[in-house]
Length: 211
Image 1 (cartoon, rainbow, N blue to C red):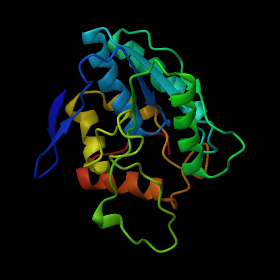
Image 2: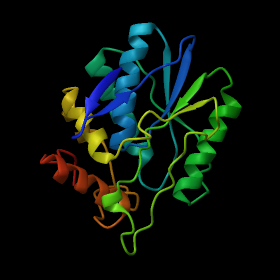
Image 3: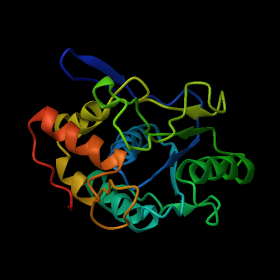
């Protein structure tokens, strides 16, 4: 799928390489991975590819939000994607290291999966160097080269939020979570909270998600 977002426009290209039979999507419960799963599920339905969501048991409540995202996408697309498989080290309290442990587990235990998709995007220059804010780890293009696809790598949060409106699925935002500190609601101080609020303000949109 190719779609233009932003001003100036930037091309979003979410593709599944030819020959793939099974893909994985790391679903965090956040808005980026949710819209990525929606797009990929739509493509998988078209080309008869198996799409399997995974989630990591992080303290931000990923396990609580991810199943509802999947169920809503199933209704929207009339598909039957499974409830996310839990992977990763639950004893690791570091947000980013937990995610990477989940990715390694997928590669080890599910060798028949052709590609693993991340919804991570870039950090906007407008949000760099905020005092007292811990910035998240974001995978680069070469992360587990050959198996990992990051279609949103060149996008920022305003672009991924805009995708919901361009695709007419903004109600899906209601099921997504943002905060990386609280498992319910938003602290309003962590990078994820700041980034989402910034994106909606930039787009002149009202966030339909739960505060």
